[in-house]
Image 1 (cartoon, rainbow, N blue to C red):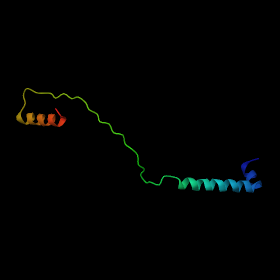
Image 2: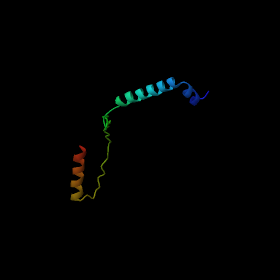
Image 3: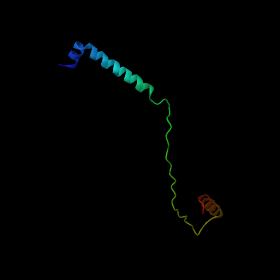
Image 4: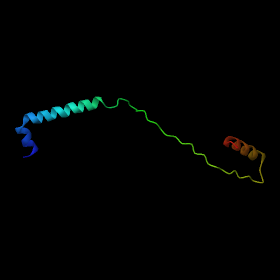
Length: 76
């Protein structure tokens, strides 16, 4: 016996199944989240690496100032 033949012969069971599925769908719809953009956390990490500053013997005044500013911003 296939599904179509069973549903024609047992109309009450078929309609009961349709009704239960519809009620379950409506309840599930109303219990879903309502936020457009739900809140979630973005985990952040701070990565600190050791860097070496190369010092050239032939430094101009401009490059020395730039180097000092870079070292100051790096916390050295």
